[in-house]
Image (tube, rainbow, N blue to C red):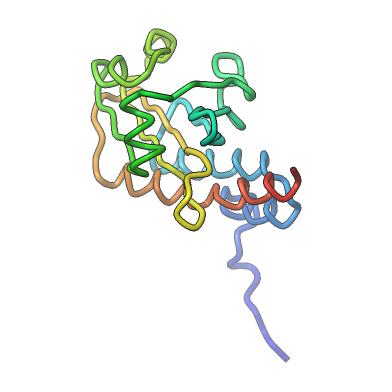
Length: 170
């Protein structure tokens, strides 16, 4: 008989909740659990998850940790923007440090900075080489470290099943 020490398995952690959400087919619960996981390493003040619509070169918000300021369903057009080219076309992580970087990258910079946010990491989420969305975290501190980028990229990978679940349900 197999003897597993189940007492070592933590049940109420962001990773456990993420796993349970995927098993239940609940993309929004997954995104919330990934937000909690990312917060452990980033201490971010805002997390959003966006779906990418390549045909219109825009994103639609699927999840927000602050739905009052950034509700789900909100859209942003990225056609012809440096950010859109960098993240959505070139498939590169965007790291913005300080309010000057936020102002240069986002039309809604006034709303972002009014929340006290001073840095951002936007990670493109890819499936088989195609961008399906972005995982975004914004922090109140103006500078970032490589470990922050690594943690955000891992969180974006954790969010990937949510995009797949939503595609399967469409």
